[in-house]
Image (cartoon, rainbow, N blue to C red; front, side, top):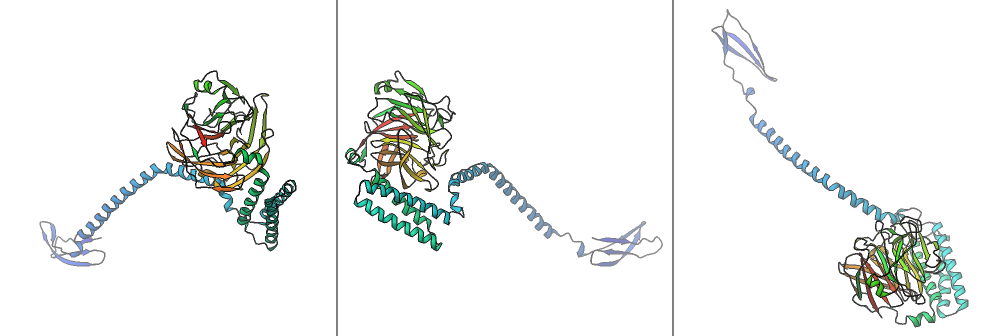
Length: 458
C-alpha cells in the first residue's frame, strides 16, 4: 500500500511531500504553482506488476479449463452411475449364495462331525447292499468307507481339519454307493449303449399355440410307456415365472393341428401355493410333476383324482438361488423334473454342494428321494440339463441358433465326461426346458415360445 503525505504551505516554498509504501519512505521537493503543490515523484515500488498479473491470469485460465473438464467428468459419471450400481447389485446378488466361503464356522469340529454322520449313513447303506447282493464293488466300498471314517476320527482328535478333501472323498463314496444300489440287469439291458452319440436336426418345429410372448415353459409327450398317448404344453403365463394350466392333446396329429385341446388347471391361480413355478414340468404316469410356487417343494398333480401331493426337496435352492445361467440366466429354473427309462428324476443344486449340479431319483408316487448323486458341474455354467438312460446331460449356449450337449454324468458308474460336443439346432436364443422322452427317444425343447423335438441317437 502506498501512502502519500502531502504538506501544503501557501506562504513557504519549497513544499515537501512524503511518499511511503509498505517498506520505503521518500522525501521530494515540490513547488507551489497557482495555488497547488506540484512535485515529481518516481519510484520502482509503484511499477505495475504486469508479469505477476500475467502469471496469475494464466493460472486462473488453466483453473477454468480444469474446472470445465471436472464438470464434464462429473456429468458423465452421473450418467453411467445407474448402470454401474445395477451391475454391482447384480454381481452382489449372484455372489450371495457363496458367502458361506467367508464364514468363520465353515471349518470347525461341528461340520466335521456332520460329515462323519453322513459317512456313517453310507456305511449302513452299503452294509445292506452287500448283504443283499455281495460283489467286489460292495466289498471294496466297505473297506473304503471304513478307511474314510478312520481318517475323520483322526482329524477330529488332532483338531487338524481339511474339510474340502473330506467332502470330495465323501462325494465320490456317495456316488459309488448310490450307483451300486441302482444298477440292475433290466437297467443295463434297456440302455446298453449308455451314452448318446448324436442328435438329429429338429423333427418338429412349431410355434406354441400361446404365441411367442410366452418365452418360458415346457412341452412334451406322456413319458410313461404304460400310460395313454398324450402331448402337452405348459407355458408360464405370469411374469415368465408361474402358471396353473397344462394344455393336453390326445394325439400328435391333434397337437400339430391345435385340435380339441383340453386345459387342465392344476391350481386355482398363478400364485396359488399349488401353482407351477419355473419351466420344470413333466407329465409322467397320469400325473403332472413340477416345482411348487414360491417354495422349495415338489408337487405332483394327479390327473385322475385331481389331488396334489407336496414334498420338500431337502436343502435344494429355490426362488432363483441356483437357476441355469449360461450366457443369460433363465429365471426360476432352480429345480428341473426329468423322466427316462429308469423313472422320475429331479435336477437341482444346494449350498452344501457349492452350487454344483445334484441329481436325485424320485419315487413317482410318494415324491420321496431314493438316491442322490453329486457332480462337479457348476449349475450356473449350463443352459439346461436332462436325464437319458440314467445319464445326466447338460447343454450350453453356442449362439442364437446353436446349442450343444457338452457334459454327461453316468449314475451307473459315477463317471463324468465333459468332452462331449453334440450339436442342437434352435430357432431362438433362449432354452427354457429340454427333456427326454423314453417312449419315442426324442428330446423336447421349449425354445422362447417355439416347440422343437429331436431324435436321440445311441
